[in-house]
Length: 200
Image (cartoon, rainbow, N blue to C red; front, side):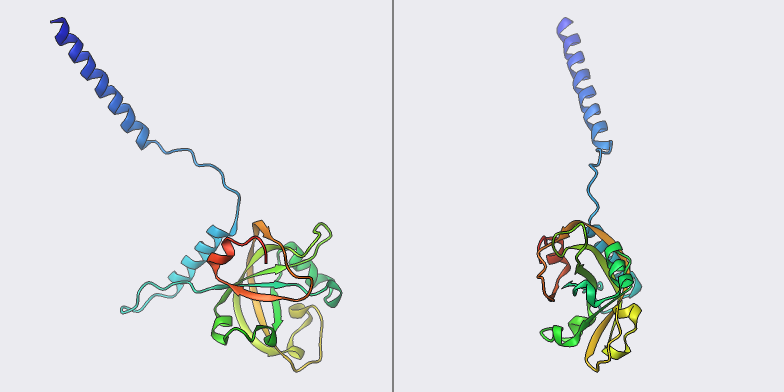
């Protein structure tokens, strides 16, 4: 009789233990706070692009082909204060670059550029650093003399062709990119490469 009672208690304890384990699995685990970075932002933008362009029945799910343009800003004295300040504050609306600076890339690649990270100088930064990632809304090719002060920071009477990028919202980079050359430099990278980048 005593042995039977002990066996029943043991079974009951096992049942309680199993019940508690199952309840623990159902309770959400606390989520650790992560620093804000551009990874989630890039993914959200990719989803927006995919939903904006519904695939045809015979196509697979559309993919985001946006590349990231990395460039070092010119010396500040070559642009007006408002233009320079807009990049320092992460609120710039335009960026331009000579067509000849991107001749190693096909026009199709330039048209697929979805984001910009510009290495700038600031009073609190020792070297050129990219502090923001901008979404690119559109790109077009224009002669330099057609660019306004708002678009380029300075007027220039030149027939040289430029790529003009219209910029949308920006996101501060949790890990700013450093190592930009002192002179002008520009290159394209994929979003995957950009997420892992620390230096130009």
